[in-house]
Figure 1 (cartoon, helix red, strand yellow):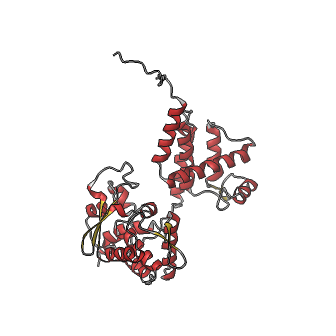
Figure 2 (figure 1 turned 90 degrees about the horizontal axis):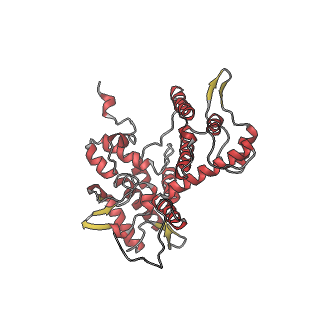
Figure 3 (figure 1 turned 135 degrees about the horizontal axis):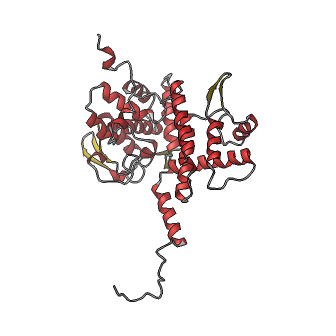
Length: 351
């Protein structure tokens, strides 16, 4: 094919990426990741760098040898010995990592944290086209056997308690008629009744995605979520909001005067609206309202999601209807949010 040459647009070498192209690729990769994912990656890599320099006396540089990953695992994973459970991270290094705030507390890591940090290191090697030490057979076998050892000991990750209907009602009763109370009531009901929305989905909720369909009835279009990261146009993107959830949201919008932009915002002293809420603010609202309700359990914002799934099961809602609200496309994934409760009918088969 013959086309005229463009003098002001030099041809690229098809065998390699230009620096401008590499920058564009990195920008797209960053934009495509969620803020929480980027923050967790950054935290994991900071920890790797701090641990490495304290353990080996030199700054970290990729690629790492498989032996360093093996050392990382035995430093942070507990194993059973004749003297009891132990791990290999020297106390002096452990204490310094905590003091410099690379770790939250001394001692071995939670298994999920350890697995996540190995996965982040693996991803870093993949992105740089380096030989990946995390795929070394010795590393993979050690990590697999470590998981099995934790499972045999019954040392499994603790899942947050579910905010089912009863604790949710108790939390709602703490919300008074102040602007902050109206906001918190609308936020809790919106997050719970639309399928247990995640913190980032609550804080990114925007008026342009909300439409009224009748008295006490609205539809919220959730185009982008963790289960729909490509913003595919799916029927389950439409989340109906009805009854008291719709009433609470309508009341919040009316008293706050919000007609565009973020739905949930800061309430400052004097009743003035501030910037959109952060994901951490949603967590704090859930915890504060649970505490004010005198609930003994320790709830998190994610408890709204497990609570919705659990309550739907208790009330006999078809699983397909539940998944349409949560956005899950895998039965196994949605069942991971179910918490067995005293209301579980399967526990009463003998009457």
